[in-house]
Length: 320
Length: 261
Image 1 (cartoon, rainbow over the protein chains, first blue to last red):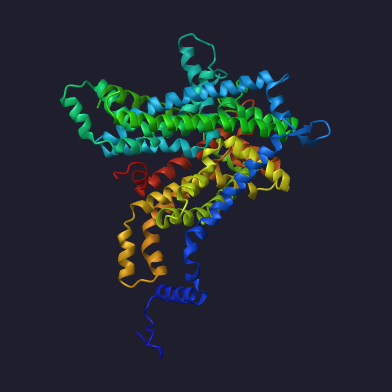
Image 2 (image 1 turned 180 degrees about the vertical axis):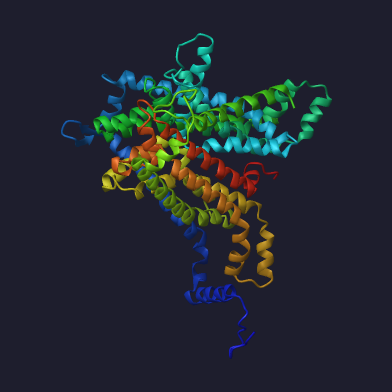
């Protein structure tokens, strides 16, 4: 160990020296002047990124309220032309049917995912086996990270004409060749990510429920069905509403499952929006359809969240 | 625990795992097209995958996009989470709601919003704008992860460090940052995988010259499917399992989804 003429010891780790440099630099630059703005400066990059999207949405609104000459590919004056074209012939009926299909299947997916997710979340919270909890969490997390193309591909192999289900059916002399191209196939495919999502979003609400409440209800003679109906479900309601909102939002934008499992026969709004862009090169009509979908899903989400909150208040006031 | 709960659990786990199993089994098929059950087994699909020029190039693009998504999301998301959780600025709720715009907008609408501004700016046909769009759509996942790590970090530790005479920078680098490290790490891994597996935004914004791997896989699904595709899908499943395994061993999965607070 040596000591130089400033009294610095050679064995002092370079990390500490680096810290000294940083501290000195901070003083020299007078960083403290910006102290009141610090949280805003730290937020700035993220806000800038999101502002790109916000700007894009504003631009969608601008485009959707302009007329567009699809022959000359030229923008016209302000008008409601795009919204009229969405609902009027020749493609109005098709668009409305697509919108209806998207919303109906999304609602069915949401209901199915929440119904199946609640018991699974309950198991994760109440099981005493740490191994089972981890196995369940791992299996639920993997579908998110596979990506939607791989999920759709997997289901195509299960449900397709050369797939697992068709093979099993053929044992029983049923050679119908799978269920691809049906709404059921699309629904099943969408459930693979929706149930895990619903489960993981309901979890925090369930962990906050005191297990003694259930024990108390059981002691008072309530059968499990009534414990669920009057204790667990009402207390989990905010989580259920949140899960329903997120699953619905994810479902209305679905693209792969209708394209692959629906064989393109059952397009969702996203499929139609993309073909408006690729086949007609019409950004104006596509903007209008995107905004309609966005508006409708926002109404659904606000309704779900409001239902979760208001019901909870009412339940607090007594047994409804 | 009731029979209904256990029955649902078994059903859900089967539903989630079945397609993954089938993909993995199919990825070892011999023969030219995929059928079930496979005609025979071989590792050829994985070897063909290495030789497939289209897939190799698309994979390189996906990895580039994933890397850029991580850089952008960590650079913007980590400071933003710290600011929101620790400094509680004015209009905190407003800022949070704004930053969640990427997941509260239906993905197809976000993708189309980016399409119109990129078309206007002449950015279609480049790869980095796709990464920017994916970052915005997935930023909240990283922020949730970092914020939940920060929320479990005892603020008294930082106060104690300050009381003991630590400078601001020292407190941040030696107390706050190590405490948040598992959260940042798991958020980073998660957003990387979301970046390389993202499909819809890439599909809408890409041209033939900028197809990422999921878009390339989707494009080859029409018609008879070669086993190579199952091998590519199998790789994504293996990566997803490895990542979840790492996240679980970091104990952040339980901390994140199963907190007793």
